[in-house]
Amino acid sequence: MKKKLVLALAGVLIVAVAGWWWSGSGDRAASQAAKAPAAGRAPADGAPAALVTLATAERQDVPVTVQVNGSVVSLNSVDLRPQVTNTVKAVHVKEGQFVKAGQLLFTLDDRADQANLARASAQQKRDEATMADLERQYKRSQELVAQNFISKSAMDATLSQLEAQRAAVAADRAAVQSAQVALGYATLRAPIAGRIGAVNIYPGTLVQPTLSLVTITQLDPIAVSFPVPESNLQDLLAAARGGARIEALVPGRKEPLTGVLNFVDNTVDPQIGTVRAKAVFANADQALWPGQFVATRVTVRTLAGVTVVPAAALMMLPEGATLYVVDQAGTATRRKVQVLHTFGTKVAVSGLEAGERVVIEGSQNVRPGGKVRVDAKAAPPGTTGVTPGSAASSDTPAPRERA
Image 1 (spheres, rainbow, N blue to C red):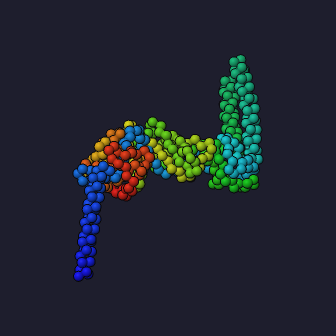
Image 2 (cartoon, rainbow, N blue to C red; image 1 turned 180 degrees about the vertical axis):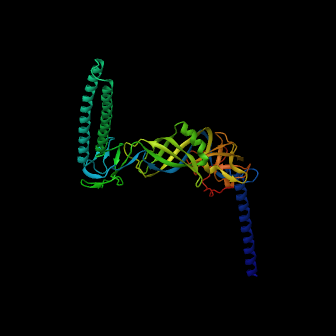
Image 3 (cartoon, one colour; image 1 turned 60 degrees about the vertical axis):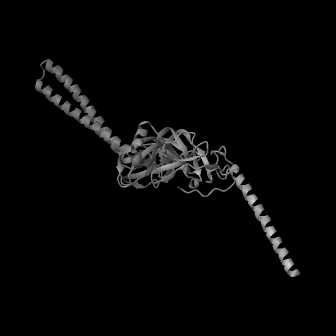
């Protein structure tokens, strides 16, 4: 009997405890449900507000640039060769030396040329003396003909001899000039200013026209040749007419070098669809070297006063590029835009006004017409803060996905 009484009391106690616990849980659930709208975690319609990061669209001028790899080329490069077969008498430069235009580089053995010039000069003087004697004879013949001491035919014979001698003197003068030219081949001077390459010629070396003595390369100014896609050809031609500035990004230098676009090729390479262009750079410090590869950047045009947003805001859908625009009430609206130009991490678009806020993180959870709440802690520099009327959350946003 006592055992049954104890079991009955235990059953009543268990039922009382269960009722008390159930009543408390219901009160806590009701309390949390009452607090949820105030915290901004669920709006009145029951749909949760998506956690997002916003950025504000800006208006600015955007330069349209084309960046490609180019190669440094010299504007002038001369392969110096002798014009005659001769022996090197003296070398006046060292390899790697900078020379000026007209500077003496090599001297060849000129003894034979000196002798030829002396012989031609002596022949010219002898014929000039003979010509002077014939001129005096012709002058006396004219006086004697006037006095009827000699016949006119004798005077004409003297004139013929004089004319022949004048021709001989003219030939002698040409021979002297030829000998001087040949003598000039014995000295080789720099035709341009530049840097000397390797010198493998020494005094006593027998050289001939087929042998290269040295190469002279101009370094200042210097040019950079680079290909430009044919889609940018018209913009490139317009930029060339306006004297576009070209930037060369040289490894090891913080600031790019600036040059002037001065040449666009007259044909497009059909194999790769590019056109060759060339820009000239001042190179007093030899930052650019012939054959070096550098990254070049040319501004072909400028988009004035366009709307710019982070590229992360764009969603590529079948109907085109779209993004979510959030109003002051925190409502997201999907809008179709047109991409004008992409540069770095930003993009210039049309169909959006400056000052409008767009979703750059968390768009995978946003629905058109739905509410959003801003994660202030996850907002990167330059993005908006907490949306008015909503609470900030420290929840970690989901990884970004394209809608």
